Amino acid sequence: MRNIFKLFVLILNHYIGRDMILSVIGFVNKRFNFIHSVFVCYPASKEYTLAYAFESKLHHQSWTPWLIGIYKQDGKWGLMFTISSLEEDFIKPENIGNIKNLVKNTDAIKDLVYASQKSFAGILPGVMYAKRIIRDTIEVDVTIQAVKQAISSVLSLNSYASNTPIIVLGGHGFVGRRLLKQLSCNEFYSVDIQTNKEYPEHLIGKEAVFINI
Image (cartoon, rainbow, N blue to C red; front, side, top):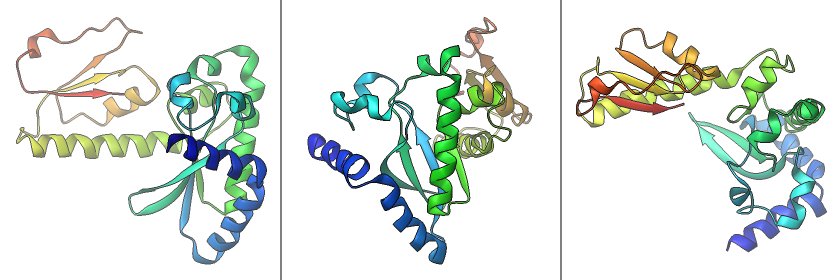
């Protein structure tokens, strides 16, 4: 089944013609407005990449988003794309041109399908923002809102008090810093390698919510 899926992705993006498919989607979406967002993700490792692409074709999608599926979030539909480059590739100075082209290609996709916004996964928004490739970071607002909803759900499901301590792994990062500003009603702790802040040992054995940002 995995090979069938990879073959489908290959045919859809490489042989049929991605722009042709997207133009058809855009024609329909312009009338019915059901596709809200274009989302570009990337694999955590090469092994993950091989779940949706043949190894011989990985170079084709290093920086070119390939359509791999659809998703629904908060009642709105979006198109999910992926590239095969990894986090280690994003921080290499020689790839700044590739990252700029990735944003340009994603904007073109957004326009083709008449979506109202684009977003990127993981560290990409932070890297793009730091390099002044993008000016707005819709991902931050969406992510923080989703995390806050998840915290509320965890507190409710476990019958924890609303002021239960929150431990944030990556609290000094691009999203983490902004999340901490909105947790003023809670006792919170940032665990982050950049600031050498370690796990709050006095909370061991006590109720707390641990968030991996």
